[in-house]
Length: 255
Image (cartoon, rainbow, N blue to C red; front, top):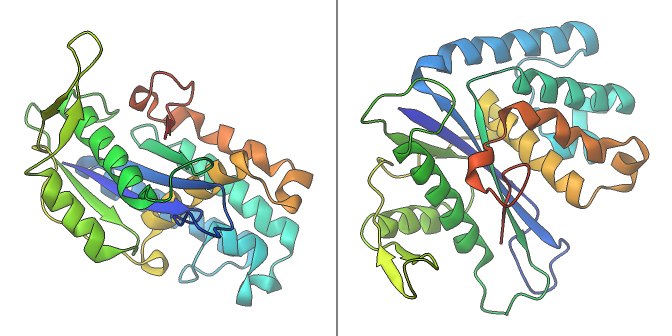
């Protein structure tokens, strides 16, 4: 079974939204690799504790680490940036991890465009397709299944959306087939989403970092631009799920 941890960056609103982009990122890991990578994340956190005083129980929330560090203000800002860079390199070294990225550019979207639903449908469909075609790096069983573990979001809406996609999931025909839609219900993703808290899951903290770095690539803050932080997303290149979108060199699904 493949587990997809999910987090977002940016705001999913359209009216008076402070962000142009909404980023949704899924970090996918097979159950057979889960323990090894969990141990690797713990080892990384121990090194960060030794080098910078970042305690294992403290939340590594990438955006807050730069702009709203709270108690972590005791760590110098340039060291906090070093932690982010090191975290990206650590995740990128996990050869059987896969990262799927969806970006909604809200500019020019109609007022009734549901950013949240459209982004999540795209992410879930890419997860389903990659599972069914056995395109994820890592173990491959003939009847592989997947489960979604998101950070807390609009939990009720997401659960309803996933249940609906198991019954009614209209997919547009390809140009070679003709116009119209086919109903292709989900078959490889089991159960309702199982929500996780950022504070208590190193895997959610890892996917939070991925979403943050992609957003900073698109719309970097003044500090990240000054420190070339908009280039940190490139560090994740070895684990990007590029089959998710063949029209983008990084596999990013643009909506």
